[in-house]
Structures are given as C-alpha cells and as structure tokens.
Length: 199
Image (cartoon, rainbow, N blue to C red):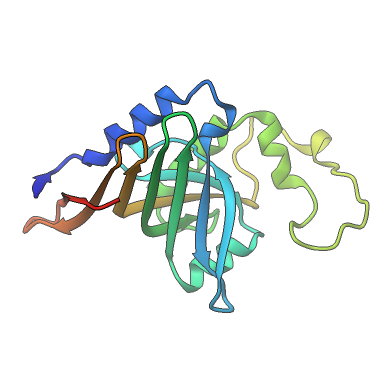
C-alpha cells in the first residue's frame, strides 16, 4: 500500500493516451450516471482535458440533456475508458460538478468560459441546435448565422468536472490490475492509496 499526494493513476492514463493517440477514438470514453428512474444511463463523451493540472476530468455537454437531470439528482458518475492498442481500461468514479451559466461561483464560471473557448467553432454550434432528445421536426439549426465566436458560452453550454475518488486500472497485456482509492488527510488534502488486485 502506497500513499501519494499526486494521483498515481494519472501518469498511467497519460501514457495510455500518448501510446494510443494515433487512434481517433482514444479521446472518447463512456460516462455512466444513475437515471432519475433509478436505472443506469450510459453515453459516450469526449475527454476535454484535466482541470488546471489537477486530476479532475472535464467534459463539455448540453445543459438540456438527460445527464444533467441525472447528476442533479445523484451527483456521481463513472467513466469507463478502454484503449484498444495498449489493452488498458480505466474505470474512474467520483462526484461530478455541473457548471452551467447559473452557477454562483465566479471561478467556476471562468472555468466554463475557458472550456467554451477551448472548443472548436463547429463543436460550439451543437449548443444552439434543436432541443436534444425531443422528436426531430426536421428543423435546421439557424445557429450558424447567430453564433458569434467572440462572445462567451451560450446558455445550453455546460461544463462537467468529475473529481475522481476511485480508479480501477486494468492492463490486459500485463495481466495486471490496480485499485486506487482516496482518503482525506488531516489538512483536507486528497491522498491516494494503491493496491494490486487480481485481474
């Protein structure tokens, strides 16, 4: 059992991203939440980086999607990320912070704006389209002409920040599995423990 202030699994994940970077799908992972009906809900999302060099994982989403309702009812999620070239899987779970335009924290609103401007103009357009999940009425997005790329995030843009609390790492090539868990130190610092477990 080892204890470290820096997330020991983060370097494993960064190595996996690097060794699989030639595969377009390596920046996609699944995010599972608990639906308001009590059942699991899973979808594929895009990795938008770590927040400010921490181990917190950023995801951009539309505030009109079901995952927002899910997270407001139960603020926990789990990522499942599989790298096909290196045969590595990361299951990362923790609390998810939902940062939309109504967030009262100016620092979080700044993080949301930074995430907005880090997105491509094409990616931003999806937030001015028709309401996701409703029946399609054949309406065309009129957002292209109305979206000014110099202005800040539109109302529908939402930043999710997953704060990892447990990471299950599986390396099938090496037949190795490590479970990383957190605990708070006396001065409220997040400390990580790691334990080798059977694959």
